[in-house]
Amino acid sequence: MIHCERPTSCSIRQGCKMIDLARSTFYYRSTAHEVALSDDQLVDLIGDIHDEFPGYGYRRVTLELCHRGYRVNHKRIARVMRERHLSVKHRRRFVRTTDSNHSNPVFPNLYRNRIPTNPNEVWVADITYIGLASGFAYLAAIIDACSRRIVGYAVSRYIDTELALAALDAAVESRRPEPGRCIHHSDRGCQYASAAYREALGHYG
Image (cartoon, rainbow, N blue to C red):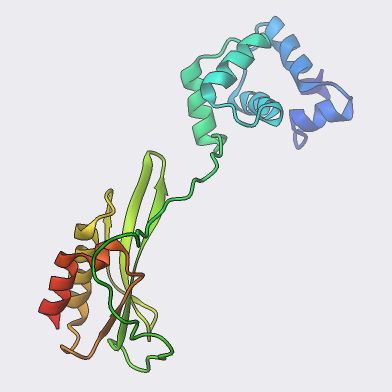
């Protein structure tokens, strides 16, 4: 009935609402008549399930659809959820990128109360994380405090001294600051306080 009577601009969701009919009832009747579900109809059903069970992934959605009388291949459900961006939104967990609990030496903060007026006067080093579907990657960046531009960066699956060194090497290669003229500022995390990083800073001047 809804297919026959509703305007083409009216979705099944809107049509069911207009006649006060649950969409699950409409689809149950369609299934009883062996009418295959289109992707749009499947999206509506998945939306209903997510309204009731927000944390359900494609496996639980498949089981819930089966419980409601719809036998749909789980691979198809996974595809539709992926293509229509219906995947479960996981709460992003905090990722710690600074480890200040170390025994390496730290140095005075030369950047305190200083406003740089020229490029290559102060570089600020930091590490952040990038959320991926399979976990996290880490981005180490060197930022020129005057221009606020990234002058060197590196990305890795591991948050270690090698990552910080790669960003420093990239910054020096691209900007070649005058030795003894550039202040290096960081959060004093273990990567930046390590012997290898301090040695690299000494080498570059």
